Length: 227
Image (tube, rainbow, N blue to C red):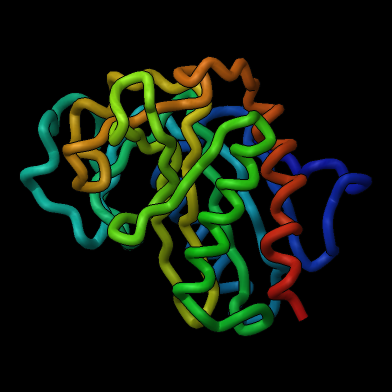
């Protein structure tokens, strides 16, 4: 089931928020994003942030290395036009597909990715989790001092595509997925660090809690770029 979030809680009318209750097949999501991004570029549809989960699957970004697909038979593997390498999507992970018109905001790809990182960090802060970025790798990371001074895990991934200055694909935040599912790939090509989730960090957050935090923090980051 796909539904629009309550209008009473909606942000500016030029931006639509959509929530899918059931897992969305990956091909369906990509087709919808392609169509919506084209419509936004043509000025016939509002911007969209789509919150969903996928069935368990792996995706390969434009920089994916075949050697990083450790278990190709474990889950379906999809080639995708987003940037980045291999990543996992599945139940317990909140995916946010973000379709914004950067011509109306800030036509700067690097700034957009930094805004996505800032959005995830602000969302994690709602659950008393300190998310951090790294200069040499995309995504959001958390330190794991329980495992050593330099140990850290990835809690959120970013992979974007931009066409005619309209963004699509987006971010994924690990709420309570089966972390063993990541073992079929080298997540984002980084073998020396692990992955974690809010549940793994001892934060008992529901998906609805995470959705509320994503909604609450979005405007803090992105409204400054709007006209």
